Length: 286
Image (cartoon, rainbow, N blue to C red; front, side):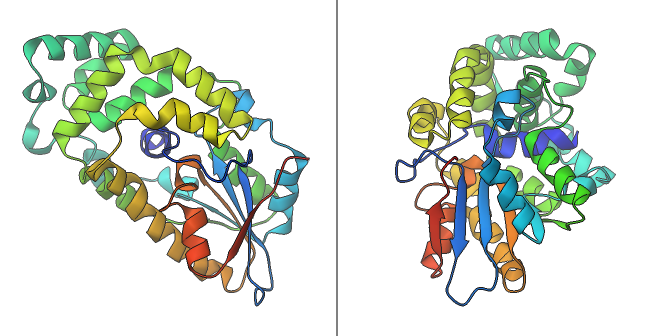
């Protein structure tokens, strides 16, 4: 179930803020004293072919860099221990019905049975956040055998480049734990009632493929991700990922491929680097 965490952490509300009106997902990070250039690329955790239709400037940037840095080293997540898997379940043996009225619970369970089949019974004991990921995953197109993040890491390894994670799986699980279960339950119910806004998601993917951050903002700003949820999933993690990227950048050029939600906004990676004295410029499609 490694996919459920990384899939949702950055796609449940794709983008909260726009960034300068530039239609690009690739950014160049430099400083006069730096020996090597670092690139920052916003991904979408999907297998849909439209997310893979980037220009040659992206592949060229990856080739120029020494290391690929993702949110996680996805090879390591394949060996997630029982304690991390157990963290996906509700605490103290509690069940999902405790967070809903009878009518709401029926709606949620009907959706789980329809989309997940036999796994729905297990879902009654899981934290709502992970159920959201599972419901999103089953609706994904499967044009590629790998989600985009996995694909970049596979390409880097094929070139002989090291792959590092800017976070650990435990840190990501801990971030989810900071979101009150009542808020998670509300978000899951909204997803069920809107059936994942399939048309909404379709538009978001098209605009992502065009690098249209402003367009994504208009679609996604109403997702309701705010307060402790926004802080846990984006703000705190952006600071951590920036600091760890900087450690690698002291001696290497790195290609940072993380969920697009982490790039823009006052607290995004672009501004995090700029506040530390780096020049961050858009790399437009060729």
